[in-house]
Amino acid sequence: MGSSRLVCVGIGAALLLAGCRREAVVPDESRSGAPRGETTDDRPAIPAPAPPANRPGDPERRDGLFAQAERLAAFHDDARAIRKLEKALAAGPEDARTRRLLGLLKLRRDSDVAAARVELRRAAALDPTDAEPHLLLASLALELGDADAAGRHVADALRRDPDRDRARVLEARLLAQGGEVGAARARLDELIEAGAPAEAWFERGKLRLRGDDPEGALADFEAALRLAPTDTRIRFNLAQALRRLGRAEEAARAQEEFELLRPVFSLAKHDQEVDPRRRLERLRTICERFPNLWSAHVERARTELAVEGTGAARRTLEAARDAFPDEPEIRELLALLLDRLGESEAARHERDEGRRLREGRDA
Image 1 (cartoon, rainbow, N blue to C red):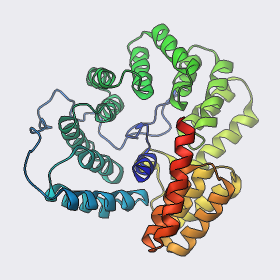
Image 2 (image 1 turned 60 degrees about the horizontal axis):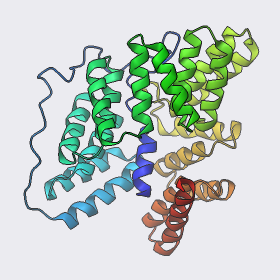
Image 3 (image 1 turned 135 degrees about the horizontal axis):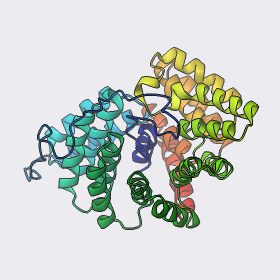
Image 4 (image 1 turned 90 degrees about the vertical axis):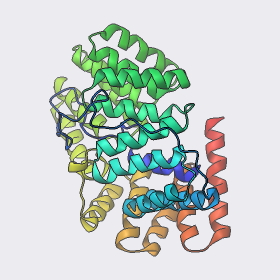
């Protein structure tokens, strides 16, 4: 479970994972790498999923390959992770979690929207009770401008899990896009009152900024940023709210922070710094500038593993664990690294601590 959470975080768990187009109140500060004419759910270019294959196979081998793929994906070694998943599918029997992760990795590595949608549809067919593939498909459809398909997938997700916050946020976003701003605002108010995630604050902030309430928008963006401090969309819109309020110096600082974080944390693939050494240099600067941003230390460790090896990554993760003892994801990633090093007892300890922290957070 721990490594699955890490994979989703790395991909951008709210797909908001898709990252095809950054949502902004003002004209987008970046444009999609995906063509605007991408095939929609109703067009025949993307085949419908085949019925789930009930064929014999080797479940133990499949599960082992899936676990290896999760570990590779947690460290952003997507090419090798995809090969492991393809071997897992060949080992069979076919399962939903393998299809879902394969779709997400194809999206993250290649921005291959069509391939991702095929895999996510197969995942949905393989596990009709799971809301997650429908949520991911809804986000993809929404980012591609297909509100009708997004609405269908949101409805499918809510039928499976009526209390899923992400589905309800997407529902509010669809209402706003359809001109039902009052209904969208009411839905977001309910979610926020119930302790909703950052995305609800962000969406309400956008509505307030469009409604000529920059003061309220700023408060919402600040609340969202406390919950998701590496979300570059929030920082970008926060800078816009500050400008609207005439707070030019603060707006310039927020814009500067956005520009610093964007090449590492933007969901838009074409924004990202791809050279690993330059990426590592930027991450070290971010860690110095934002010492309390634990996710930057985690991303630094991932990049150090690729550039400098296990020693540097381990030192960064151990320092992050000591600095942020209540963050389970640091423990989980450190456990994966210790597994790689063959230190099974130390890995088990970190994994158990991560599980304990999550259970305490969810209680």
